[in-house]
Image 1 (cartoon, rainbow, N blue to C red):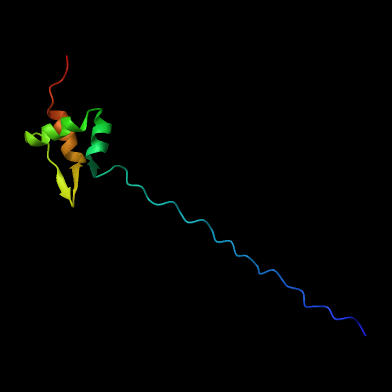
Image 2 (cartoon, rainbow, N blue to C red):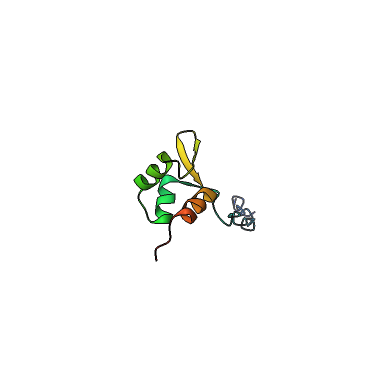
Length: 84
């Protein structure tokens, strides 16, 4: 008679799932926060707030956030006089 041996534990097979595809990134943002818009244009946020107050730049509110649509930024920049 052989001595008692406990049953051997088998390792469960690990199934490796393929990596998830990266999330789709839109080609450009539809709207910018005040900080993002200021960074993109290289101006201060106060410059943007002044343009909003003067009616030269339009923005939308989303809760407490102020967002500037990308099209509004383009129009505002295009309306600026060119430096010659």
